[in-house]
Amino acid sequence: MRKFRGIMAISVTTLAVIMSLFQIYTGGYQALAAQWQRGIHLGFGLVLIFLLFPPVKRFSESKIALGLDFLLAALSFVVSYYYLSTIEQMITRQGDPNTMDLIMSVCAIALVLEATRRTIGWVMSALAIVFLLYGVYGAYFPEIISHAGIDWPWLSSFLFLSTEGIYGIPIGVSATFVFLFVLFTGAIQLSGGDKVIVNISALLLGGTRGGSAKACVFMGVLIGMISGSPVAAAAAVGSLTIPLMVQKGFRPIFAATTTAIAANGGALMPPVMGAAAFIMAELLNEQYLAICVAAILPALLYYFSIYMASDFEAASQGIPGIPKEERPSFMPVLKESVIFTGPFIALLLCMGLLATTPQRAAAVAFFTLVAIYFMNEIPKKSMTPKKAFEYAVTILRGGTMGMLTIISTCACAGIIVGVVNISGLGMQLSSILVDLSGGSLLAMLLLTMLTSIVLGMGLPVTACYIILAVLAAPVLIQQGVTPMGAHLFVFYFGIVSGLTPPVALTAYVAAGIAGTPVFQTGFYCFGVAAITYLIPFVFIYDPSLMFYGPLYKTAWAVFVCAMSIIAVTSGIMGYLLRPCHWVERIVLVIAAVATIVPEIYSTLAGLSVFALILAIQFVQVRKAKAVEHVAA
Image (tube, rainbow, N blue to C red; front, side, top):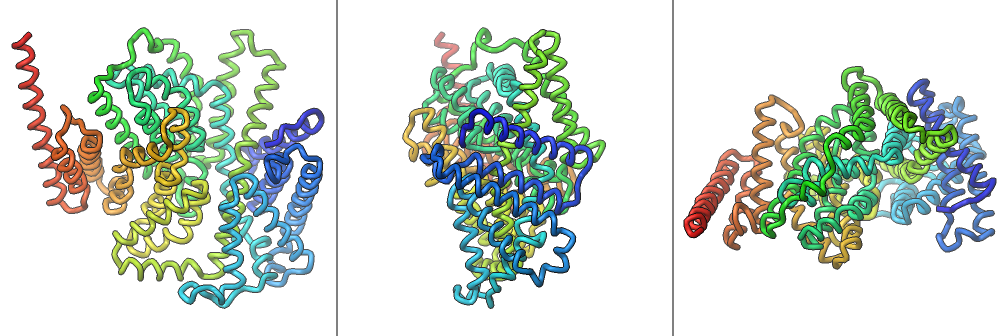
């Protein structure tokens, strides 16, 4: 990202602040019509992207590159102005575009593709180009997915002028829900939220066995949830916790693994689940709170698995908790945390009891945070008018900067979604998946899982989810899967791709901090997190894990999953109540898998085997302690 100085720095900051103020006004007070909101939002985003992201990093200071980017920023403004000025006539001209419509359509598509390449790399842009080629030259593709082909003028104008292309649902969600949540979470970090999270984690879990690793898990939940980026969360959490974990006796590779898994799952954890969750709510026509309710138990089970892995590793290595004198005191942490608990309470009250829109709830939470922060700082006499102004500008600028990659991703995803819808590829893919799976739901889930992971390796979670929500989720729904389950399934695996070799980016970032071999860390991380890959299959076969049906069924599903997680984690880590023999480890893993198979006899058999091993080890440990006591 370019670092401007002087008048250009002031201009860019002013533009970013205006964008944030526009989003706060329209989200928290007076919403605009959908096309106006989306057009202004994307216009701001494209202009800022071309000003701040050079075509190639090494040419960021080049005057030629800067001149080109000024032209592209100006063209972005012109295209956005044209779109907004022709909104009233779009419906009548959509099937019969004029020459200027076609010119602006081509410019808009090219600008979005280039903005996406600059912000998140070439993979997403290349994928969109493949879909565009498919849309035009569909007759030349393999027969199984071929179609007659669409005239380029008609396709380009459809993607630009309709609400099913660039200005479709993905950019609509970015322009409403997502921006204000990114602004809110950015304000938390700027107001010292990271430090408070570290202290809360150490206070709550630091004193337990292997407390440094368990504090890392809790930290990963909170920082991963508010950062929105698994890789950024791994860097933030790892820089704080990996040195401490190694110092306390954990192996460096395990410290890196714990950090990666904890940071990677933040986007799964309600109430702030990232951009993809808001798009899911829009696609399913559900309240965002309903998405949070359905996602909470799978997310908690995900973190329970790494918590148990940390506990078993600490037990096997004899690692105690953090000494009391090294942990923060209760009252100072309580005072610090008030600043951040208030906004989250406001957020939940607005979305739950008051049933406001998510964007208005985020706006209320944002203003609550800012108000409490000022009330806390003013008595210290450190908050001068100048500092207050700088704080406000930094938050507003940071909110816009944090959105630029999301804006380009959603606009580019709109191109892909538009081609899929107009070409009928979604229906064709449905029949292909049904044929490949032989009608078996399990086979179809496995194919969808692999597709999600592969796409997630090269794409941001949001882009991966949008594509799979259009291509794969409808197929699962046709097979009888609940719509919520189908969408959460692809969302979940888009996230865990960050832990899956060979492109386990989150694991590799943690490995870099720990100084461990990246590929070895990636595969070790995959092994420790293995049980988390089974959780989505459980909520597909047993929707009670998403609070569908009676509560007693949900309680039973949670119990079964928890026992399975303990069994498989002890098998992988080689420790339950004592070190496990290799035969016990194999049996524990088999019992864990049998436990979550959706057949009552298999579940009871798995639970029985696990209970037997647990009982045997319990008796052996008691005998060993009795012998030690007598000897002493």
